[in-house]
Image (cartoon, rainbow, N blue to C red; front, side):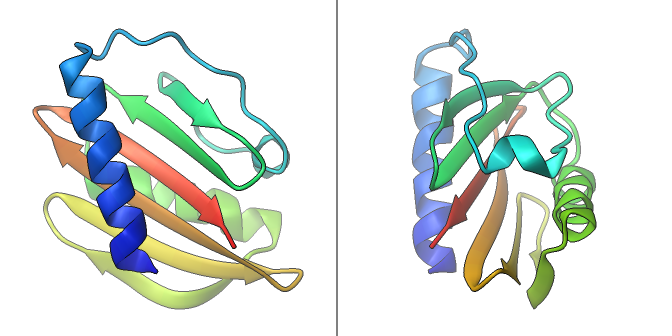
Length: 119
């Protein structure tokens, strides 16, 4: 499942780059609104009940991944898998109320994309 999420996020990075990163922001949908996610200066590209994607103009993949995973932990999500980290990607999984959540942060051309999904 992680490979699919990373591939999907990578596709969004490519799409965002093709659009020059100037896409309008979408509102966060539930359940993401309940999680106190550190969206901050990010641009919500897409959000529905099963996934959300947020774009950032630079930063650290690892730092952003840790910020998002800490928000999910505070929300009550229990770690399923330890984070997988590299210079250009960060993935992490957790479980809450019998639902699995996957976080993937990827970078490309100075931009970061955060993808969250539930299944």
